[in-house]
Image 1 (cartoon, one colour):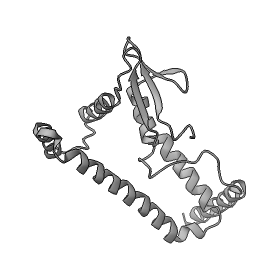
Image 2: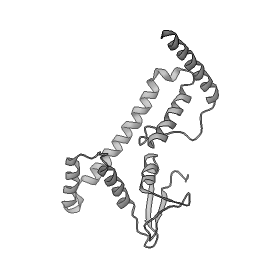
Image 3: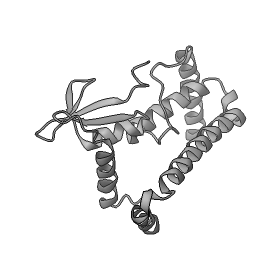
Length: 181
């Protein structure tokens, strides 16, 4: 199994500090949120007891984002979630949420595939290099959009040639714009 397929193991020490076992350093909740935005599964365990604390920390990340005004969950949805905890056996809410998010992920990936298939810009020389740059920029600026902007580790072959073409075209466009002024 590849490293990226396994959940990233985070250990919580008695001091409540979180330790990334892959990079051997301490991480924050925001770091963990970044891993998740980059489509990396995480597992957080208590070092002493061995308890899985993943759910608790994911809820804490959501609560912190909500408290900073990054409201994603409408109040009526939050009310429904609280009500679902009152139903004996948990009701159907967990299965509903799981199915809804699976459908959302599938729809996002299909939409991305369809857009790249019908995008006339994809026929332009150097488009793939430009797209890779855009994805890397989006990832660097916001940690990615949960699958919509996944930057690749290695650039595609021929990227240097494509970049030269793009630079040349950009210079030509700038020249034309300066003449219009």
